[in-house]
Image (cartoon, rainbow, N blue to C red):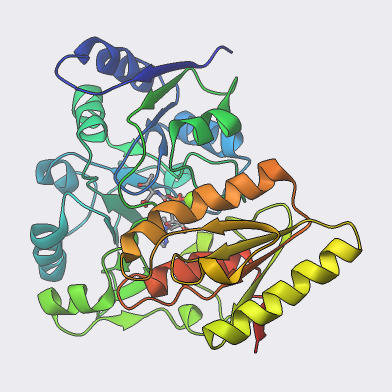
Length: 349
Ligand code: TXA
Ligand code: MG
């Protein structure tokens, strides 16, 4: 299959391309599209065969449910049994935006989309191309991140092309995404709202709107016995090909250890990758050093993380060491992704 890429800079001017993409969705084919978090791999969320194509294209285990993307609140009503009060408040505050909510599903939502669960994940993305595509398709669009299962989520259309070329008919290229890590997931089917995956909307922002919010215990403990409620959270995700370790401690001590690893690596003809920040960049004089941004501008770190992990794959480094990126607002979400990429390998200095 040939994969066509269309650059969309203005949805009104390029209505024809959006119509063609929507036509693919209506016919049961897949289209990758930009959202404000990461690129999604979309199909008709009410069509079990389209969902099956999504799992096949990603190589994703079929017990890992998909998120339905909607363009307005009227669409939500048809997909869920009820909309709890807290969900209405969160939607009012954060939709369209990087928040996914879990509801009890209506009968029209196929089990193929929800991985066999009685609940369904729904999100209204804040991106003009995504919203135009959903509206034009007339159906909720099921979309996981548009990466091959296990690879870092795509933040550029070029990343989608790397993973999906030849597997899907069309990629809508909306340029670089704004946020760079996937949406916060909140479960509203329990007594209290529960965060299943951290994201740009942090706990404090949620609590300011709905009062107490609890955390899935699996987010705090990375033991195999603690099963995450979001099935996808159990997989080793976002993994670069080289082994990655996170180094924790005072910046100078962290840099000293990483520099020592670079020296050792060199002696063995190995290339070492480093993930650091603007503030610590001057500490590193050797190795393949990538700065993800400044600790003073945490958004940069989220935006760049997955791209940097993909670049290390292309450069075929032998091992990667990353500083801990525990910034105040986004640090939890960023470290959740980095921790998975590292299979939770942490060196404390
Ligand atoms: O930002 C995002 O959310 C992106 C963009 C494309 O919207 N999408 C995304 O989808 O990250 P995906 O498939 O990569 O991650 C969906 C996560 C998985 O961890 C899955 O297990 C969880 O949502 N999930 C989906 N439905 C669920 C449900 N009914 N109950 C619990 N977890 C659910
Ligand atoms: Mg994903």
